[in-house]
Image (cartoon, rainbow, N blue to C red; front, side, top):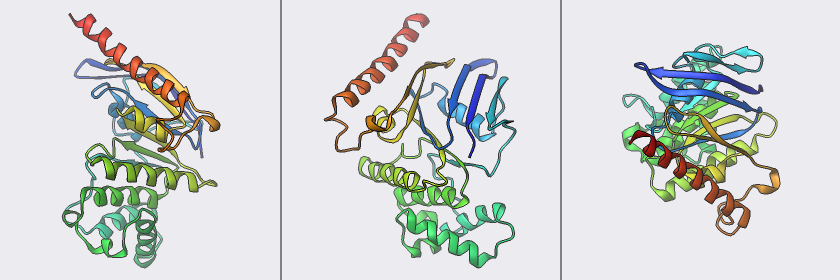
Length: 263
């Protein structure tokens, strides 16, 4: 496992600045939420972390090494499930596993896929079903299964529950948090994009708030162990409610300042 250090990242698209002087320090095993309004550059930053785009300037370090291109050491879960519709769920998972575990037999890869399907709460029969035979929640569980089965030390999640209903979203939030917590010896570093303040409070050990585009980090909060709250106590804990109100105020104030600036 390696720490992540982000130094002075700048990024523009068609000459329009999107990210401006982004700096972060993330410890190995952190669950980091990238929080901010829609369209502020959070997903763009995650693409840089995935190696799918390159910054105009600045450097992202994983350990002591500059990040260069995509890697199987960084798993990605998108909002749109990203499963090939012409392949069964199992073949979608095994196809990815073949890229990393090249020397393992198909039998062993299937066994690994079935093991992680069970861990994300899906039945063995899901392996032979096509994505269009699954609910949205089941498709996203399958995508998460694939990423955890690849066992990357870093997992990048781009609003993975944004298209789901509230009940399914809550179940999958709890599932991901449980998977992350249980793997104590090899705990993944997770970067999770969200515009939902409550989701960030429930999941993260550290929050970076992105401001309006061109985006900067306008606030950072690191949780102590005793500060963390679960779903049942989120709206009963005074400190959690105070932080919730503070985050909402910071984001709303940033939006208002941007609107005034554009008048």
